[in-house]
Length: 213
Image (cartoon, rainbow, N blue to C red):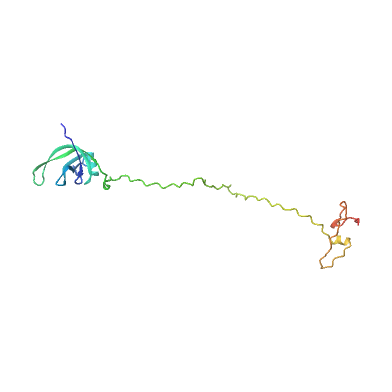
């Protein structure tokens, strides 16, 4: 014998929790399954009560909401109870020992407490420009500054040798008149071009001895 039913439909209400033990809850809900045909142009549906236990009940209580599309696999069972208002005995059929799988997206308000939130995107890392290496300063020894670059000295043109100065004594020995006190002495430069190079010169630029002229 086989008692197995597979139903695909939508929840007509949020699931209810039954049972006193929180570790072994019972979740009950009703689903509407559309028929393949319509009567007078209006869609027809059949309604089934379902009950799940244990971990499946926790799953349905946490994620089940009115209007969610789900697949239910279980067995049909007759349940009896007593009406609290009238005291009459009642019975109904429901799907038990059920496996439930939701076929649509989870609603936003069904996220469990303490669920991990998506991590923020990392900050972009700066990348140096390609082809350009970072310049680094040359370290200097502690207490010493880097000496400036030595610039080569500019070459100077050779200056011509100055003619020997003629003193007052030399001018007097040559027979030139003495300068007037307080007046600037003006003496012509003597011409020694006729003096031989081997002739000795005395102090003050005067030839030693009698010159040969």
